[in-house]
Image (cartoon, rainbow, N blue to C red; front, side):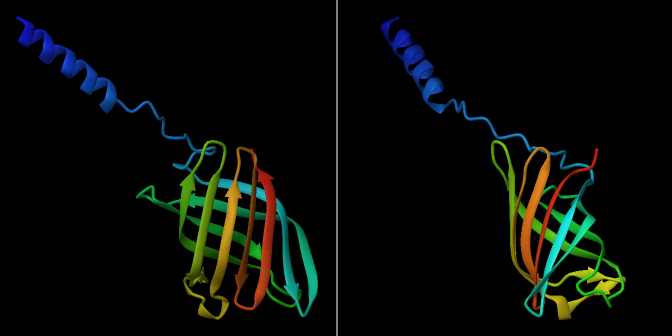
Length: 152
């Protein structure tokens, strides 16, 4: 009987040690649907900052749930450039308690149905909170940033 109590006590202690009470943080946005943000895109061209307000980007989650696409809607790097939708594909992210951090070092963006290697994305980093997004990157030689709020 003492042996049975010993094993019961040992099993109970083992169960308490093996139990993990840490919760996985919940994402601050729904990563199963596309989320749009309205804000300002700033691009450095020939040493001058060109800012465009009322710009839109979308966070478009991948099917595997491990990355998302960032879609710049109708972006222009210089006034003479036609407005284009440019997608940065498969951006990895990390969910924290009150934000989502993301980064990519060298990614070929997609535009007009194909790759856009002349605007290689480097140094992409950013943060998503419950209501906003803030990111910076280089599209080719153009230092670019976006700061916006969620469109509800």
